[in-house]
Image (cartoon, rainbow, N blue to C red; front, side):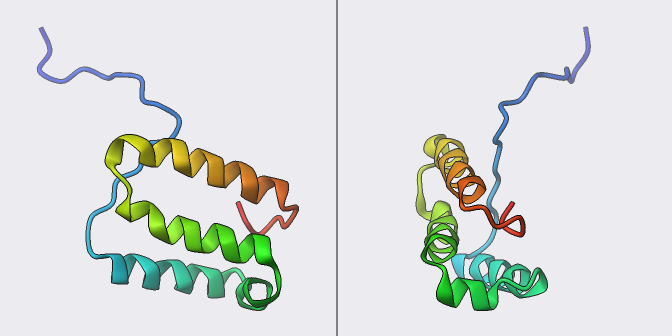
Length: 84
C-alpha cells in the first residue's frame, strides 16, 4: 500500500495563501505586464472580470472554483486574447 496516491483533480483547483492586498497587487502587476491597463480603464468587461477575480479570495473555498470558471467563461467571451 502506498502512502500517497495520485488522484484526479477537478479542472479548477485554486489555492490562496496570503493577504488580499498582496494578491491584488500581484494581479495589477500582471495586468500591467500584458498591457491591459488602458483596456482596464476603457473596457467594462475587462474591468468587471478583474474586480471579480480580486474578490475570489473572499469566497468560501468550496465555491471558488465554480466562480472562477464563470469568470473564465466571461473573459473568453470578451474577445480580448490578452484576457486568458
